[in-house]
Amino acid sequence: MTRFPAEWEKQSAILIAWPHKSADFGHHLDAVEQTYSVIADTITQYQPLIIVCHDDIHQQHIQKLISNQGDINFIFAPVNDIWVRDTVFLSVAKAGVISHLNFLFNGWGEEYQHQHDNILNHKLLNVKPFKGKVHKDIDFILEGGSIDSDGIDTLLTTKQCLLSPNRNHGLTQAEIEQQLLESLGVKRIFWLDYESQGGDEADSHIDTLARFCSANTIAYTCCKDTNDLQYTSLKYMERQLQELRNHANEPYHLVPLPLPKPIYDEEGQQLPANYANFLIINHAVLVPSYGDDMDSIAVARLAECFPEHEIIAIPCMALVQQYGSLHCMAMQFPEGELNSLTEL
Image 1 (cartoon, rainbow, N blue to C red):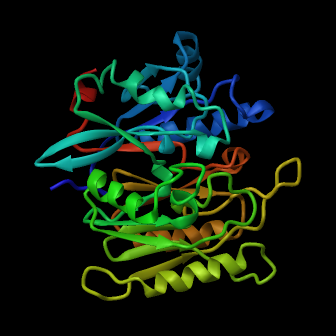
Image 2: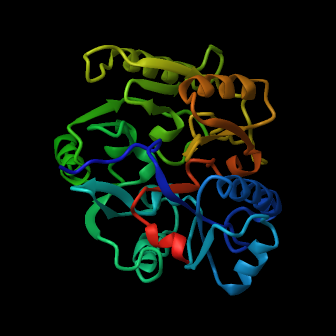
Image 3: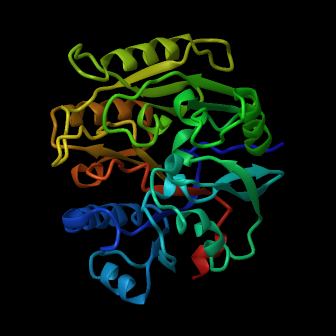
């Protein structure tokens, strides 16, 4: 039976794509690279890291910025955006074999250029540690940040993203469900109804809203400020989460993650700063921080969710300027999938 592993399961590696001067960060690039350096140095304390970069010159530049280079494998490939959560393979397990699923990517509903991102996985298949691995191309648009797995048979997602007409136009909810059931081996899909308010260019990705922390625990973005633009939508989402039932037919243990104070870009657009976009790696959880009083509260609450992990706050003010954060920028691969990485 096919299974979509949970993120907290043992990993063989994390993949990121290093930002480049040709991308969208503009004059924020130096600050973003500082953040990436901290993230790279943190991940390599726990497990191998794969970095997608443009070429040899770009690799040499990156190597000057990072400290621990022993567990890093560089791959050359062009990308349109660095948000690999939505572009790189999803991994499923069946009969002890890990398979790469290559879904289509259309730039978050044709919002952005995506010619390089949509073929990135085929580039990866030509090089170690991906070469020769089992993979399958799937004629269906799906972004990794739009779904979250409990590691058993249940997905969390939002109607606003998966049912949006600018992705799989013409497919009904039932047809989309069937595609997910067949591809990922899930049996239950929890469809949250969340109308985004401000700063969200991905149509309500679940990884900014609600995340499984275990088969019985969900951490979710909450808002207590009635004047906040997101208050009504998040309150409605909270009520939906309260109605969900786990495999024992009991309510989930729900852990609210507060919102930081609103953060705006230079044009006055509110940015999607949140704490639900945390990244789980082997023995640690990386949590976005924004220099806000709520940072410590989010860290403490996620520490309760992951008692066997070290909780590490990572400054993400620079990342959120381009509408993403820790989870958006990385993709994990399950244990056993990339064993050859240790041989490089």
